[in-house]
Image (cartoon, rainbow, N blue to C red):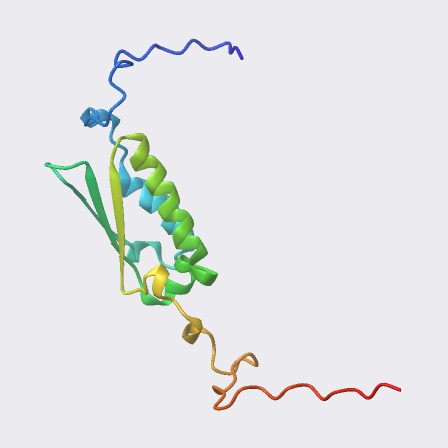
Length: 142
């Protein structure tokens, strides 16, 4: 497939291993996080983002905090929103040869969310059973 734009050739084709990218090639993670999170926030000024780059290893730690009233919108049903945000951040980090860790303060981790976050008036809630369910009655055949 050809395109009208010419693409510059990469000068480091022979070394396909993970090397530290030049400082200019590292994405601006703080701005990327703000871009991804702020649309979910009722008060965007409450968003606090801290980005820590590891000097010895290609790892980035991003910590974010926001108003607890916005937690449901940021996490989304079943954690879908925050998982999508993590996926975008991981893709950006991987393109730079880095690993990324996202910590959300004041919220539940995605893997530990359960149905307790649902309203208690839900009709799906049933008390736990103390005995196994009864078997269905047998039909008479003629």
